[in-house]
Image (cartoon, rainbow, N blue to C red; front, side):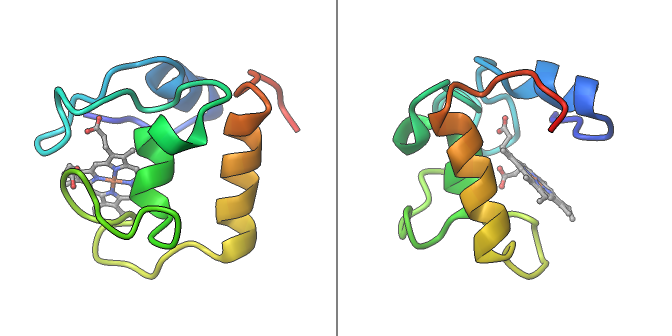
Length: 87
Ligand code: HEM
């Protein structure tokens, strides 16, 4: 229920879109600009900030957690308003 296969697809599926997956539907919004603490995307990738997942599994499912620098980059992007830019 979440297509991250291109930048455009991913952005449109994330920005202010309600969670719709098998576990997280009805449990919040994927990316809330300026609000890391309430964004399901951040919760799914950052077990330090979110020691208790509200729904489903840590992402990438079955794989290693993202590097701290990748997690920081995603969270900084959300905190800065989740702009649709190409950098
Ligand atoms: C860094 C890569 C990934 C990110 C950022 C990511 C992100 C997410 C997010 C935000 C959700 C919640 C979507 C919603 O409920 O609306 C989700 C759910 C899900 N993802 Fe991923 N995902 C990643 C990789 C993967 C991989 C590699 C798999 C499969 C092997 C996977 C399988 C699933 C499944 C089955 C769900 C629904 C169940 C659940 O919420 O735990 N994901 N993912």
